[in-house]
Length: 229
Image 1 (cartoon, one colour):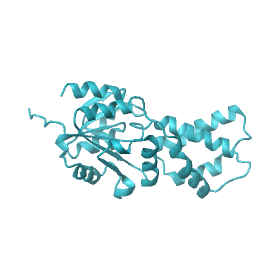
Image 2: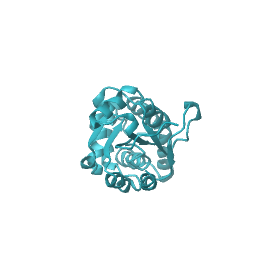
Image 3: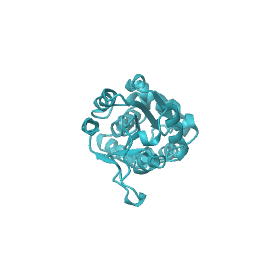
Image 4: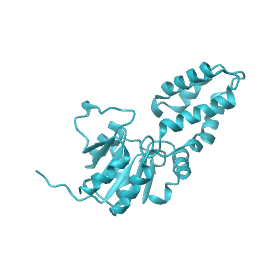
C-alpha cells in the first residue's frame, strides 16, 4: 500500500462549506420580498421563499435564467426586469452572508497544524470575493481563487492545478474540504488531492467511482482529523 504524503495545505470550498449558503439565500430572499413584494401576507411569503429555494437549485441554477423566471412567476405589484433583479442581487446578496457553524474553528485548527490555506469557489469574482470580505476571511488564506477570475469552473481539472500552483504544493500534499461530491471531492481527486466531504444538501454520489478520504457532519470535526496526522 502506497504511503500518503504529509499534508502541507488545505483548500476549502466557500458556499455551504465556509459560508452557510442555506441561511444566506433565505435571508436574501426575505430581503427581496420585503423590498419588492411587501403587499403579500405571511403565507404567501412562505410559499414564495420555498419556491425560490427550489428554483435556485442550491446555487447551481444560471442566475440570469433564475431572475428571468422570477420576473414571470412572482406576483409583483410593479413588475421589475431581470436586469434590475440581477443588479439588486449583486448589491445585496453578499451582505447576507453568514459563516458556517465552526468555520473559524476549522480554519484555526488548520493554522495550528501549520498548513497553507487555500479557497477555491465557483462563481463571479465580484460576488464571491464580496462574500469573503463580508465574512472577514480574506486574511486567513494564502490563496483565494474564483472560477470567474480563472475562467474555468470546478470540476475542470485545470482549476485545481491552478490553485495548487499558487499554493506551491502538490495534489498529494493537499486536502480539499467541500460539500459537493463532484465539484469538490471528485474534481480535486483528479489531481491527487484527498477529499473531506462535508455533508450538507448533497448526499454522496456513488456513481463517481471513488469515496472521500473522510466524511464529516460539522466543520469542528476537522480538528480531530488533523490530530490523527
